[in-house]
Length: 293
Image (tube, rainbow, N blue to C red):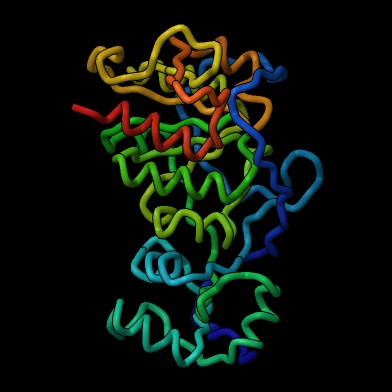
């Protein structure tokens, strides 16, 4: 492919892949360091490794699919590197987002795009190479109203993407994940988010329990979704308070310290007899309940 325009900004490292897991979300697990009060949690994508000597995802990666690419092209916070698309995709994108675009498009054939992204990727004939979004402090992110989502070691990027999509649908401005055991920005996550990655602040923290303490200090009521919860989740039980909803990992659920740091454990009634739901489905239902008038 043609060299990147030197006037565009450059990243420093290649993205790494992440393993997927997708079992239910409501079982319990253990393990996290004791928290200490901390009010300036920041999403930091500039570190060179993840604490285990492995490269961090702080360099350019490919977004693909119309929703993800269109949203990124209209986000002034994005550092754009290269836009490639087939002739058919160019016609579709022009109809959805009239030119001029934030970066010129380059024609490419579908086989070449398959080679760049990998066989089996549903890219719809369009891909955008970009850097990860810049980080933000918790204080800045909380200036926007609405419930907050906290994800305790949810590892599947498709689940995280779907949760971001639900967050945007129900007015949740912020999603907090753990720094190590959670996916970084990837094409799969962005495609599942269907454009929401550009609108929802995604903050990574080294310690979930510490993040919950910081949220409490900011006046939020911390509720954890757990099969053993004693309170049925609905709007009337929240007392008009702004809440942070904690969702546990697929399979293991919230870890002990995370669960103990919550103000209240809640459950979703499931009269059909299922023990649990996929975590992204549970997040959507819980957000619906929280945001009802």
